[in-house]
Amino acid sequence: MGRADFSANRVLKALREELRALYGEHLVWLVLFSPHVDAKEKPGDPLEVLAVLRGESGVAEEPEKIRGLLERLSRTFGEEILCRFATEKDYVLKKDPFLEGVRRDGVLL
Image (cartoon, helix red, strand yellow):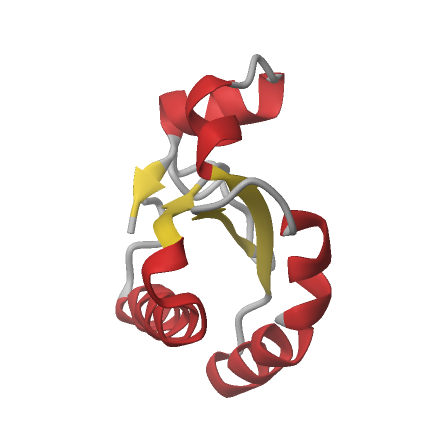
């Protein structure tokens, strides 16, 4: 991670803990994806993660459910955080350029 400093690591750890508390066993993976993975981020670039959830549906509603959480963490740590969602099945099997890129280049948190 290009911005593997103490602050970014603290943000990602807090996010992982909060999502684990919210989703429990339904949170399969949390994956950091570019530009932070390949050290090409610019100042002010958000931390971007993909939350992979167990189950067949419902991921379309998840960003709205965690909006307040992301805003709170962003204010607390001074880092913008963006979180996208995918089902476990889609993450593993779907032929999609975005998901293929995250599978190839992402970093499990």
